[in-house]
Length: 235
Image (cartoon, rainbow, N blue to C red; front, side, top):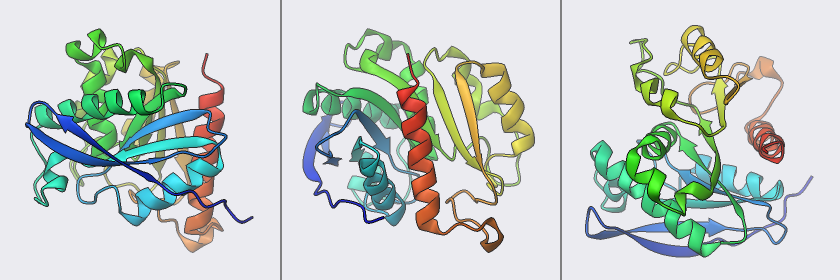
């Protein structure tokens, strides 16, 4: 089925902690029900094919997206900013998205680092006092980076115990940054707030093996359909 074409709207927002600005793209279908504030991963910005494809497919499922750059990516630096700057950027992006589309219910999350920093930002005390952040109804993780490759552990998820929002984990069985043997019990301890959705044979970039019977396009459609179904089930 052909997907309708939507043209993203360019947005700029300020991150007070850096005294600088970051670019963002709002992709909103006419029939949008939700707005997902979507952060990129560590090594690729909002224009990466993964982010572009995901945003287009989510739009087909009536989910608008607000993609944005972290300061280090805006300034074309390779090394990610310190966590305090990353989380401040998340909060500024959500506040801007909330003002840009005040009529839409909000979701927040991202790919890998972006998803983890979003959850960290929303678990911190400043976030509990911000009206725009209180509009967020749920968190979506596209490949939560539970640990570094070949160094299994769960310390990166310690802050999730403070989260009260529903969380959707979309994870591949070949993801080297999230051992299923660790992620499954973690999500069980976070239940019923956390839902783990496994994509068979997918790696951290959600590329699947041929034996899965799916193409990359099928995977994006599957991810987006799962997010839409989960979001519509939120109270």
